[in-house]
Image (cartoon, rainbow, N blue to C red; front, side, top):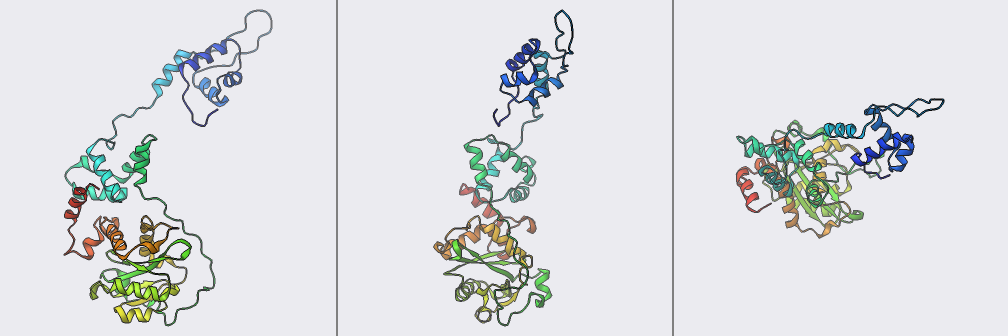
Length: 356
């Protein structure tokens, strides 16, 4: 018997009817039809079949009562569920074209739903919820189109492996300033200019890319590094931080990775005060951890990150910075971090002009 279930056909129901009248048991009929015995028992039970009682003496034995092939087929057709209305989000519609353009541009269904509500506030036919988008995609029949559309979604958010508790064996960084000593305005996230930082490692930890995320606007900056050493981190982070205006680079919260051993020199080079999170406490830098997960779409695990140029990393960061974010009211990080240089509606128009 196959793993894919199919409904009983009229031919099979006729065979069931005929063989029951011949006196065969349901189990024997199931074997002859290459069907599960449970399939036969459910079919007979919901169509009123009763097992004949044993009768002694001469005469024709009584027939099994209740089951008729034509009646069973009619009932099955009447019980078939058909949609009351045609799906609003389906291939070939204007809404589908809008959704697929954003999917190709790297937007998540939730970001698409929020963006469409902003771009088309007075056109309900061009608005849709993110759950409807997911449902429409996964309800598509198997085939090349379904494979392509699912390929535009973001996959592979890595599950965090449990870390060992107890003594931290990485060694202490000299003169660390704890996260608990940060000024209150850093925690409140009211003033832009306070960042969270980390490294994304490549295959076998032989390559790395520095990630910086501004806590208020979620603006992301990527830094090319030759390796994960303290000198490489100092050079890479200094380069990208010094491209930002001084009033927008005030502090940096980092974990206790050894690549930040030269934090004093980083402060001297950029003016950024460095604070260190507690060991094994990624939630204290949750914005950066979440952003690193998003960046894995472009910098997948197990890949060699040394081949990316700074210009290519800037382009990846810009893709992330021009996506609408739910926590920002579906505005873009670039829209908030560089309001004078970024126009959301112009970006939206350019996105469609390029055919993404």
